Image (tube, rainbow, N blue to C red; front, side):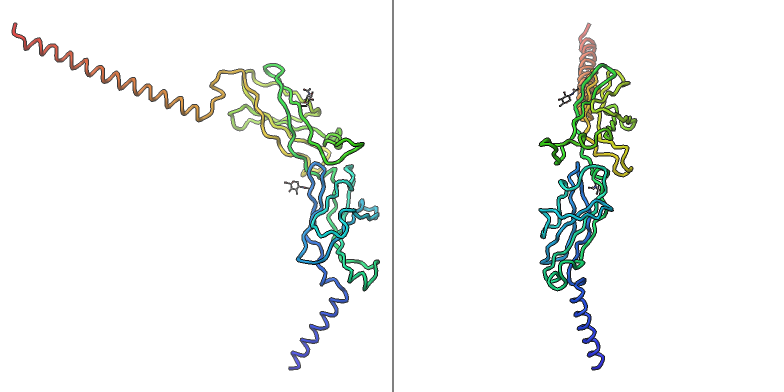
Length: 291
Ligand SMILES: *[C@@H]1O[C@H](CO)[C@@H](O)[C@H](O)[C@H]1NC(C)=O
Ligand SMILES: *[C@@H]1O[C@H](CO)[C@@H](O)[C@H](O)[C@H]1NC(C)=O
């Protein structure tokens, strides 16, 4: 009995303690992470079932100048788009997700250190993923093509003009070009180009080639240097139709040839047999005729 009393007391004490510190009863944001594509940067987190709202603050790292975000003030969402707040220059940012709790504010005042979760440091300029680039292919001569690469738009505007990834990355943006003879596996060649109008020369005349491009930013850390590969585009060799044929077409052609040959052989064999018979019959007919 004494034991149960003690347990109850401990339980009660702990409950009171957790109520006064607040920390254990207020669910903090968890799994805080950034996602960023073409400089659209979103902070995401998860919360356990809760009636609390969250307020997002951000600051340039080491500046300790925390600002809040209009559209992420006392939000019940679990993400906050910080694209317009974070400058896409080479700067590190921090963010903080603070639990809003009137109960805590009433009890401890607004200066109270609210339960909160820091986001990992993020640098959009260095870490934003870059989507696949589009490009067109133009033949210059038998051994040379030009790839005209266009840049994806970002959701950042400057002076009323929507910026492309090139406007942001400027001369840090290079292009990785991968090309291979179509139909052949392996033997893929790579080339880094500085200009969005990139020339690839030294191609085998008459061969058809396929090309892919990806944004390449050598000034970034290795893990984020390369953007997504575009879908391949192929240049037709000025060639015999045979090179463009798919496996299916080849199977079709071989099947037809084999059929023709079989029909031919069968016909020949049948003809020969019939002739043979006739020839056999003729002498017998002759021999049966009395001389
Ligand atoms: C970039 O893309 C990779 C691969 O899809 C992903 O793992 C990473 O989280 C992305 N980074 C950002 C900041 O969105
Ligand atoms: C590249 O493509 C863009 C848009 O498709 C076009 O405006 C531009 O003139 C092209 N440049 C070259 C060098 O072909």
